[in-house]
Length: 497
Image 1 (tube, rainbow, N blue to C red):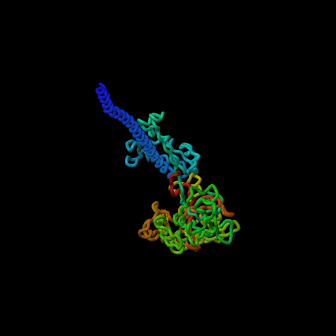
Image 2: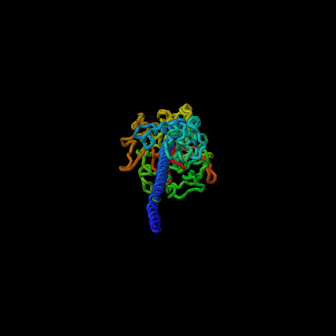
Image 3: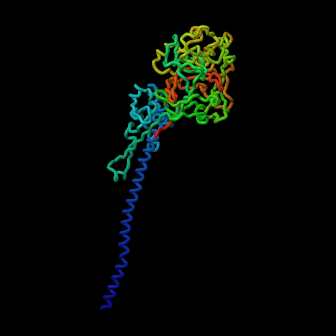
């Protein structure tokens, strides 16, 4: 009996041993199923989060692109703000091939002006679109916040995300700030000849003492009068210490740019004199010349002008009846200014027609009434101008006249000698193979309030001067072509963090 019980007990023991693995396999299956739910859940959560992240990136792309498109248009005018809003809108509502989309490129978006604000610095303060239209001056930066668009663009439909968040529909948003980081101004400062930005000069518009269509030796001006002209290096970067190294200045002179967003309305760091003996080579890149002892210009980054014809006073300005005595209006020095015979309201007694230099190679004189009627920045097509029949009254005494054999241009397509694109009398093509652009010979120069004491100067405005001939180590001749609205001179726009 005992043996039988023992066998029975043994048999039961073996049965227990045999059934134990089945129970363990069941527990493992349950644990595996539970773990699988967690793993799948985390995969689902990762998928949900990746969709939110992707939507964030899509909206960031929208913010970046619309901010850049808007910032390029800002020029200090109401129309510039209007254009900025239109360009931002076009990035969303333009052609199907170019319009920005979201949800993996499947859906388009509508624009709202509420998404765009404007400021005078990357840090604000920010003005709404309507506020910017009424006060556009100084606004050079655009800020886009996608929360100003339809809120559904940021909403992402998820599943597992809801387990970890009270928000049933996560929302993404993005913002971007864009604005200028450089302006198209050459870092060569000269003196303003008068303090008034616009003045009535016997019926003609005069700007900071300069007259349109009159040429000046830009190295030979000073205020007050003195025995020599005064020129300045205007720091091309916002540094506290003057920059004088030719190798550092050369790229800025080649390209005619400065690495700052604004000049007027404050002080700039300057030093004197401008090293023309080393940098005239770089100014002459406008004529297709790229040789220099130090840091020569690059033809790709500093293209030449499309018309490199030099309008020399003794043969290169054939529209003048009498050969001028020099490349610019004749020097006039008094106690207050070192300027030219074209400066005073009446030229000195005895001034002759030859002393006004070559006239109107690039720009024509403007009636003062044209400026008064405008009341805002100069229109894109320019102010109305005089014709050459007014020379006898504009430049008196002297009364220069146009040639009877080589007529001064009168056509609407070629209103000045420079505007020609064919022929040899007024036009010369850039060297073969050179990249070239129109108006490269126009130097935008800071006009400083003189006299300048120390290394700080005030920029009153930016003057446009057309290089009539190549520069030399002792001369830089420029025909005045008016003031340049500073905000129209943005050379590079970029995104700010």
